[in-house]
Image 1: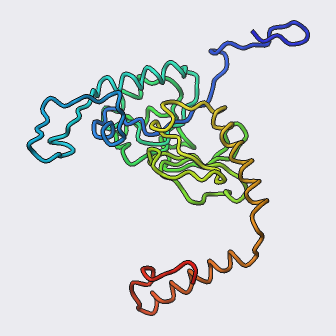
Image 2 (image 1 turned 90 degrees about the vertical axis):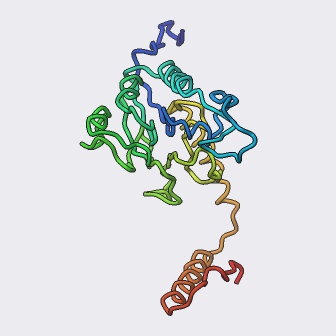
Image 3 (image 1 turned 45 degrees about the vertical axis):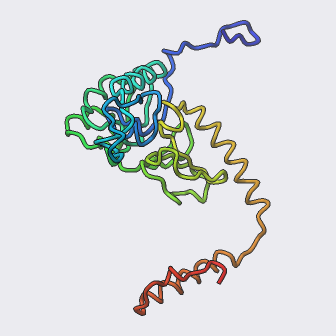
Length: 256
């Protein structure tokens, strides 16, 4: 209970206030991703593995997958964190198949930023909350709790208003893309977070990154000609291609 100076209880029950969560790449019913991403708790020694034959990812893998256990674990964890009133931004690759089944089972008002594995029926798409009148978007620039943010499945190196400190959240990479501390973006995938990410955690991490970003540019030696140098180099490379040359980039040296 939270009691302030006048002795009144200002705490609010979990069910009275909706929360916002973000997630990507749960890959429900996706056998190969469990192996690819090494989700070890859902893997076991394959009794049909033949060590006398070459290892093959699909036909002769030393590991097998508890797929139902994988799916039930993710669903149970999801529903233990989110209520039906909460807002969930799914940044792609929710499931491999049986999409409607999973959408019905997962709590929350679910918005879909479509990923490359989100291939489902139109009826299944209609189960998501609409984004500006559409059942899904491939990317979406919006405000969440007052903060400008670009949402997409795949990561962007730059995005709308990134130079003015907007945020970028993405998936797809399963944690295998290097995160740069002073860039205001990061992977919200299941494999690096383990489930739904509360918006308060998103804010906490981005606040830290904003501090690092401010310090980085404060300490960076000012060189007004640096950006122009990159433009000049890129233009020179492109003109060589326009003039019919090949293997231009192969011989390129950044220090030239």
